[in-house]
Image (cartoon, rainbow, N blue to C red; front, side, top):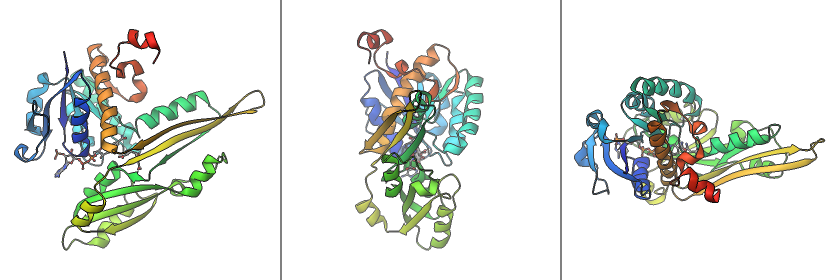
Length: 328
Ligand SMILES: NC(=O)C1=CN([C@@H]2O[C@H](COP(=O)(O)OP(=O)(O)OC[C@H]3O[C@@H](n4cnc5c(N)ncnc54)[C@H](OP(=O)(O)O)[C@@H]3O)[C@@H](O)[C@H]2O)C=CC1
Ligand SMILES: N[C@@H](C[C@H]1CC(C(=O)O)=NO1)C(=O)O
């Protein structure tokens, strides 16, 4: 029997999840929910329909896992706790500083409804978090670094689009080359947030919008831009469509450490991603964790989880026995 998937919120990530479900033979998309007029939202899956978000709870018995694809800046803090009491849910919440409070709110809701919730699923937070944990546990005396880009951060782009007067936005994260080089050379540098990345934002503003106010709101935005050197460009919708249609990204987590009685043996652990499509890769991670949420829910493992709480075998299409047979 297929895992019946619902999508709530149909933007870059929602479209990516629709595509990821197609690539997973044990899943079927049942419904897409949107806050807009469903008639205006066109999906590609012929066996699924678009509904208004107000119709979601009435369909809770028709969906095994609801994947929440709203923006982390303002949507998920409200939507994930709201729907976690009615559905097994997965979200990609990535406002790192606010993950503890989001976890607490979602955990309370999921336990109230006896449901399984997974938050902050994706690549960072998500796969990068896991690899930082593995490397830290294995090389406790080491030092680790995370670099992203150059690429389009969906979270930062979404956060800018939420500013009054902004019609569209793309935010590029750019690693500082000298910092990258020092890490790669094994210099183990002490780096501040500002010394590791810069951020560049392209904005389409409403006619007559106060551009100075928009630029200031971007540059001072807590948890997104206030700790970075950020450049803001105002462009036309035509320029945005022509020059910023893609959503590539990537990055790497690197940890250096040593072993031996005299710490004489040096080790480097690295996990890297090169992504043509940030949303489609993130959605592929989410689909695997939706499988895990379904399985863990059937075992009665309720409440909120993060990627740290999910045994890898739950993610795989193969059974634990099949995995052991060839030790994937
Ligand atoms: N953990 C990780 O590694 C990653 C996390 N993310 C997270 O994913 C979140 C979502 O990113 P993304 O999908 O790019 O954001 P979008 O701005 O594309 O979509 C966010 C929401 O906005 C609404 N929306 C989308 N398009 C339109 C439109 N044309 N008009 C009106 N409303 C629209 C949709 O809700 P509705 O249908 O209800 O209108 C949608 O769910 C990001 O905020 C980020 O935090 C992303 C990548 C990686
Ligand atoms: N959550 C990020 C995924 C990575 C990319 C990123 C950044 O460029 O700041 N931080 O984490 C996203 O929304 O794309």
